[in-house]
Amino acid sequence: MKLRTQEMLSDFVAGDIAWRKKELGDLRHIAQTAGGPARRQLMTRCAIALMYAHLEGFTKQAGRAYLEYVAAQKLTNDQIAQNFLALTLADMLASVHASRKPSAYARAVQLLASGGAERARVPYKTGVDTESNLSSRVLQEVIYTLGLDYSPYASKEKLLDSRLLAKRNHIAHGENVQLDDVDYDELHYGVIEMMECLRNQIENAAALRSFVRAV
Image (cartoon, rainbow, N blue to C red; front, side, top):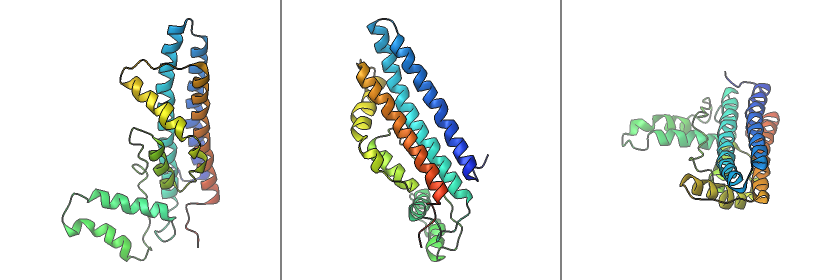
């Protein structure tokens, strides 16, 4: 199904975040009611891995959905916002990077020589790359790619890098990570806040047509 309208985009993003929030909420309840310290620590370690998975998964799915919506608007290269033009050009160059043949760069040359009249080919299937390691640096690049404002996430950099991502990596390597109730709740609500922020930004950007280059 192509995401051609704002309603379709909004429905997709709302549906994707809804099941993630429910799963995280259910897991939090299970962790809080688990009997015994050892059982609770087991559940909190599972929760850290799932919190990270949902944040990365939603960032990727919602971001790609927005790119698909932008691509479906059939704008030309001189109409589309510069971040999407940069993404389009980067995708073209990446596909021919290993080639030494001038002919391999024909599409990129055509884009530059056409004066922008050619239809923009936004690579929505591959345009959002979380690198399977969603740090604040990677998130900042994703937010730029989507043409959104990174400032709401700046206050969450320590939570994302030092607490969520680092703990998830330790767990993935079999280490015995401990997490108290306060840390758990801060991570839980911090992840949900970041997902909600991205959802709101995407819906607002679509409604305001922020993907169109300002004249």
